[in-house]
Length: 119
Image 1: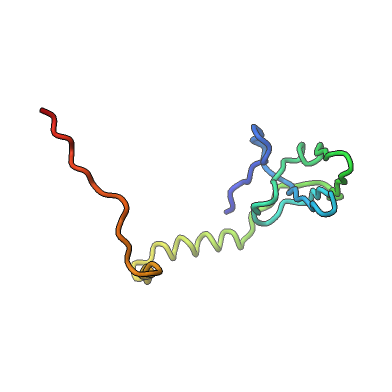
Image 2: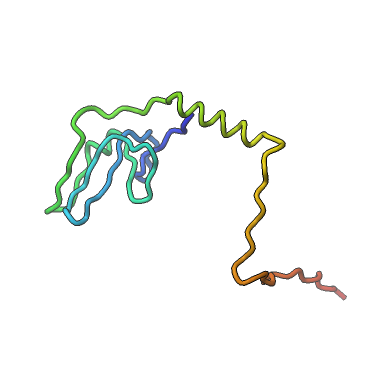
């Protein structure tokens, strides 16, 4: 089951129901339904912050028509979680070998120092 995403606004602990993205070239902020996945250049907002969002002068806000609702857990979410747990628990699962570093083996830059001798 997916975890509840929280509002991106500082100090807000409400669950996110909308996603805010910016179209900088068009000076537009777009507030739509909660995206399926959290994206690095978008912001999750609770209903209060999604409805009260303001933008700088000269910018436009495009808002989703309709109500924002919390996403419902789907069968796909539960199936994916069960398969991930099952795969992680397999004893016979193949363990990939680490790829060698480009340019051959490297010397470690950290070393262990002996304890200082106190007299």
